[in-house]
Structure formats: structure tokens, C-alpha cells
Length: 232
Image 1 (cartoon, rainbow, N blue to C red):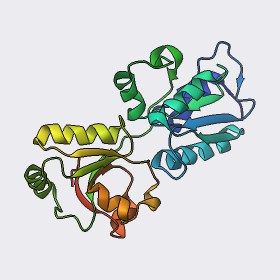
Image 2 (image 1 turned 90 degrees about the vertical axis):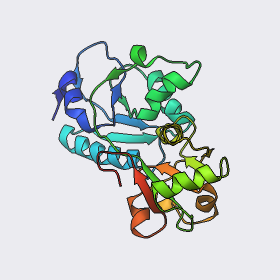
Image 3 (image 1 turned 30 degrees about the vertical axis):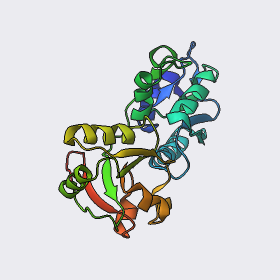
């Protein structure tokens, strides 16, 4: 099945959290060859899983393969720059997350301009951040954590999946709202299945992460709180 390019872009609502496509100059039968979706997160991450589900749906619907290409690093800047450097023919989509949008304000200079170089296609998903702690940690809820952090300023590590990412800013907001002083530690973003109750987790003390449901269900981490519509 072939669609005009604009109709395809409307159908690709599930391509990413905020899918973006390089600007295309001329209308044509679309797609006539494989399309790729670049994501700035590693295989097995929530972004990777969601994008692969949608890519399979698009592949079956459009009759052309939709390929997911992982280019993690630099708070998703690598994936964005790779997409912008691709030919502006509509065959490259890129997954844009909140971290990507944050970069526009945190980085003094970037080799691209989101509004100028990319065109938004559609929104895909919203998610909540979760505050978790190691099972051996003294605090098991937010009130206990705040009290412990105030009694031990600068001695509790707060991990995120990268400097400048949404998890980092969520942690900084928590610190600002509660008046506590915790030390930020940036850890690589890993799939939920890779989180273990090992020395890395125990050294982190507290984490603002997402997509860790499997870790909670088997007791690898303890959930202290959440920031979504239904806080834990």
C-alpha cells in the first residue's frame, strides 16, 4: 500500500514521543523504500521498545520496512544531529524526548536549531518519573527521605540517567521544592531488565527514573514516590 507523503506522516502518529521528520521539498509516492526512525536511547529502553512496536505496525501497514536505529549519547543530541544530517527526503524520522527539548536551554551552543531544522509530525506518549531507592536504604517513602536528607546534607547520592536529562531536572526540582541537598550522580541509561540491587544501585541511594516496573515487581528497588497524575 502506498500513500502520499503527507498522509503517511499523519499516519505515523506512533513513531516517537514527538516524532520529527526532515523537511521534504517535493511531493511523491511515499514511501517507496525503507524508512528509518533514529532514537537517542539504547536497545531495550522504553523509547526503543515503544518505537519498535510502532515501526512494526507501520511496516505492515505501509508495505515498506520501518527500521529503528539506536544512536544514544550526549543527552540525545547525537541522534538529533544524525537525523538533521540525513538527506531531507522524508525517509528519516527521529524520536524527540523531553531531554532533547531541555538541551536547547542547557547547552550554550548546539550545531542545530530544532525549530529551523526539524518539522514535528505527532505526539506519541506521555510518562511519569518515579523516585526509587535501594531496598537497603533507610528511607522507604518521600517523607522519610526528606528528613534523612536534611539530617545528612550532601551525603546522599541522587542518580539520574544523564546530566541535563528529564530525570536529572526532576531530581533538581525535588531538591529545590524540599530544601534538601543531595549529590547528583549521572549514570548510563539502562533497560529496566539491567537494573540490579548491586554496588551501583546501593551507591546511588536515590534515583529518578522511568520504566522500572519490572524492577519493582521482583524487589530489586523500592519505590519511594512518583510525580505523575497518580503519585505513589
